[in-house]
Length: 134
Image (tube, rainbow, N blue to C red; front, side):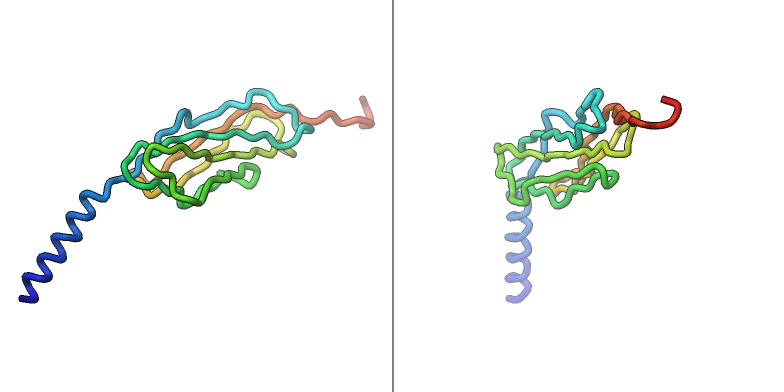
């Protein structure tokens, strides 16, 4: 009898897993070029929009920038199937003149487990005044 109950329970769990569905994340775009930005203007922001095209709730478990100058923020609540969400990325150009390319790595509850977003651009350094030789 225990064997039959154990088998039935295992079959029930397996069926629930199969029919539970799976979340899937679909981004409108996974990269953004800020173009030319001025260091003295301060941080710039961009929102990456996505849709849960799966059939189960989507969770962003974590989001990490490739350095301290790149800070992502995101909703901690599950995104239901068919609904949209956003990952906002803030880049601070202070002390970072020249070209840049930064990444944000997302850890997800999807089959792929991870996604990568990219930002890029060129930082024009702030003008320095009063230096000798100017």
